[in-house]
Length: 228
Image 1: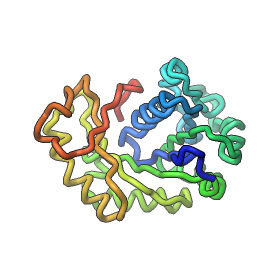
Image 2: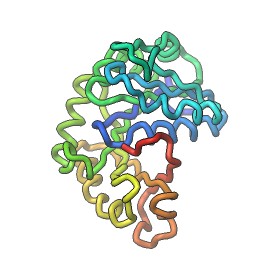
Image 3: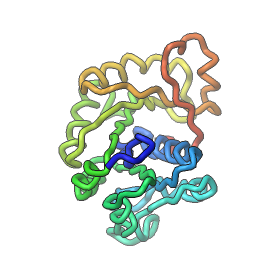
Image 4: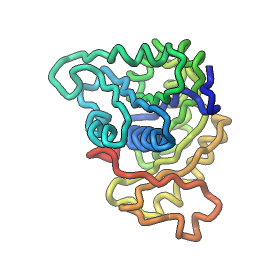
């Protein structure tokens, strides 16, 4: 069921470790909430005990977004559990927005539990790519990894966000140089390139740089302690 406003009820943010998925997911959730829509951000990685989405929980709550963080996240419990509310939301029929932050292949396996319900609700699945991460340095490697995430989750990627970053050292030239990389990934996957993410406090406002004219830019706030 697609909500009345036409936007999909569920947005899944996936990608490889270090792509910057959580920064993208947090910024997307905040943007959704600012439209007046009830919004939840769910972290479905129950394998890694150190949850980046938990780092942003206070920021999310200030913005009116409810974080759904695995029980006992950031603790010494070996296998945290997903919050029960996540199942109720995904299987429901309301107009809320659910942003799901998928932590790598392990998180994709967990996401697979909800695949059928997510398809019923209506979804988009955005893969975040980063040219500067070792395992996805080539478009072909990034596509291979994306196919693995699709297979594990039972869901298909519907768009690409280029989040190529060197952390604090990221320059406008780094992002500009990553454009062909992201375009090739989108071509190989046969999905749209949603845009190019950047953090203005690091790179400056790229919308004022003529070299980026014609590109879809996605300015983001720093949402977690790490940019990777």
